[in-house]
Length: 124
Figure 1 (cartoon, rainbow, N blue to C red):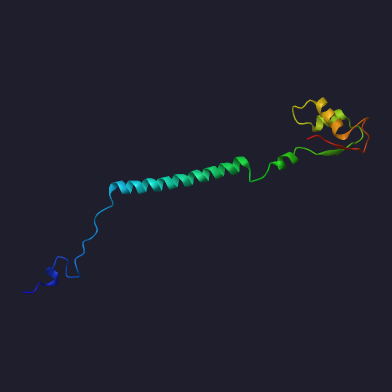
Figure 2 (cartoon, one colour; figure 1 turned 90 degrees about the vertical axis):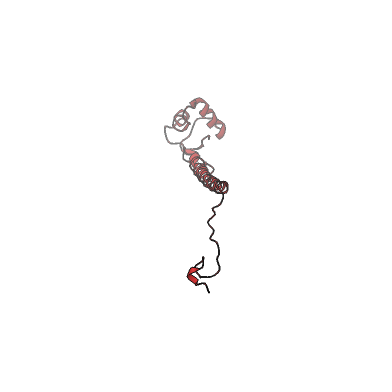
């Protein structure tokens, strides 16, 4: 008596191959999940550090643009200008005008009063 295909355990559709129903052990799945979480955390940390670097450190500049916009490096003396007036106008905030006047005199080797049309180099 011959067996019919329908009566075979695998339904008669080829050799019986057991299906893989086993799952990876729990420990291995957790290890893969931890590794994936570590990769995500590392990526987020890199993005945050790069963003903070750009925001706090500028965009690769040396910061000279801020110094250039503070004021002129030299002025031409106009009628009525005095060293005291120049010091009050161009000295950084909180600087003693007398110290700034002395720095102007030293930088320009001034020995006498200001003359209209003179070019005066200002201290940094």
